[in-house]
Length: 255
Image 1: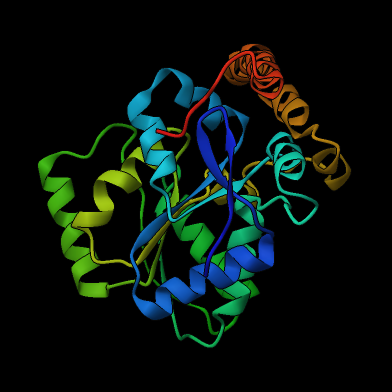
Image 2: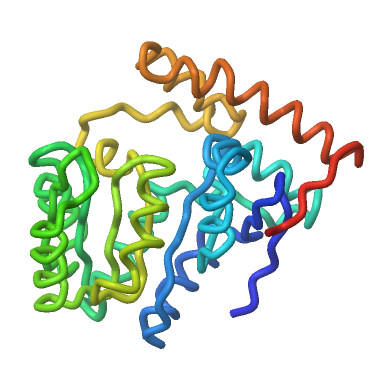
């Protein structure tokens, strides 16, 4: 499947909707074509400005979808109205629904203690027949050698078609780029807070706020101490840089 991409501050973002993203993931699993999926928003694009290695990771993704409305609006300006939001929690639900026949298997990696297991129970309840072969709750630090060996052994035994990563940006993207070549799975998908949303640990913004590009405000009000910098500094910085890119005052090449 040939998927068009557009440039947002030097990050190549996939022009697609939820249906196309789901089909692309399933096609990759069927063909055993390995890759990772980044669900990217303003935070990820902004993080990539000061981290060239992270920008290369985003640009090396099999899919790099629009996780927030600012990227959707950028895509519609560059490509047209076909660009839609591909939100991580929605992508997870759509793929789970599409694999209720058990043809592809899943593995959950991420979340606080017990969250991945709770997510497995919730997905099995909502989508009878879905095949989830295992879960892992990693420590809040890089894996040590023994943990890497144990994870690799479990994946070698279970060979899931899809490995869902619920860490945070940029941690989950860096994990996927580093570990995809070392683990026996076909497609890794970094979906961030989807683990917490689907298990009820965090409350999602109302859909009207998502459509208006105000999900950031909902999240900021829910956890201001942790997120004030992300939304109080990163969002204005992103908007200023997009202004420079749109006016041609600064170039952001894809590297």
